[in-house]
Length: 278
Image (cartoon, rainbow, N blue to C red; front, side):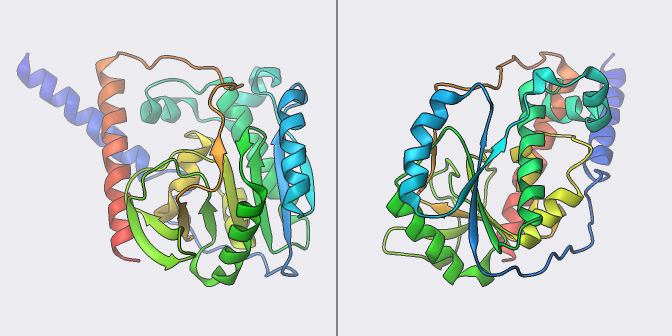
């Protein structure tokens, strides 16, 4: 029995490692998308039914004093099942995440994909992409955007809400308070992001099929070949009290648990290695 168990565990490990290193967006060629005209455009992602969130967000956007545009978010539950089946690789998603993809996660992923595509159709050099539950001080965020543009040679994607305690390698001192970091640990959140055209083009090119949640995909800079950075401390914060992504428990199946732990471990190792060589 013990021998059989070891064989089964070895099979799961090999399957998982093979899945991770044969993702649709592994070992990618570099993507370019032109430099743009030097300007910044704000895109905020919001569901039609999230009127209360927009009422809170719009006054902050007005004070930000940057042009802004709404991205009409995609509600995952409204998508036909056949459409979801086309864009999601469900088996691999389940192996990595220990559960099937949630409708809200699919909608969130496709909404950000829509924002990146919209940005690339513009002449702007940078996009500040915010989810509609983002909280921020407009003056602080505007100053941070300007500081990051002054340091544009050090990043392609900046997570403005890393939800971490600064565990990373310092790339630049942005101000007396804030630093630009390469993370040494996993960062799985995407409430606020400043990206350039290269990052957007790369994310669009390799986004489908969906094999993991949005923030997991964005974070894999060692695959995507762009410079993923964090601002610490946060200048954008997420309101966790009012989420449109349903919560669902993880499978207790021992094999899914094992595969997920290996995935998390490998991601952590790759994070540390990536930071060490930058």
